[in-house]
Image 1 (cartoon, rainbow, N blue to C red):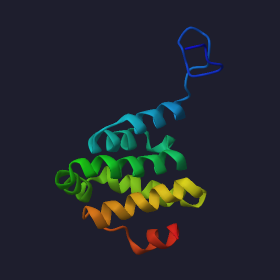
Image 2: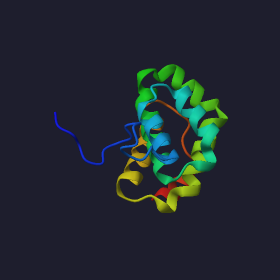
Image 3: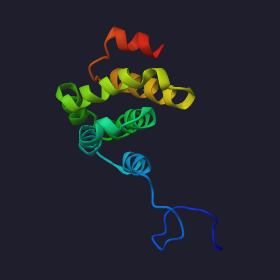
Length: 128
């Protein structure tokens, strides 16, 4: 037990409420479906930073693996996934360390392990 210091938002004035960026990250971490992740990307694309993009790709890989057949069919035709790839293009210069690892591994696994349409050559070169 014991009281923590400066933890998360308790709702009683004891700590700051989570920022919008923190709320987005929390949603990305907790969502369990491709649809939910793609909806979040579509609804808040303008607010996504490079961390959100990296987290979204990584989480998409994980949840798509749970239902690969239907996930691949959805991702290969869904404009929200194309939007996420455009966000990768937009933010790629900010990726460092874990973010680049998440994006590269996530995209490679979606393509190689599940058969999602490959990223284009230009994006592949940008990530290298």
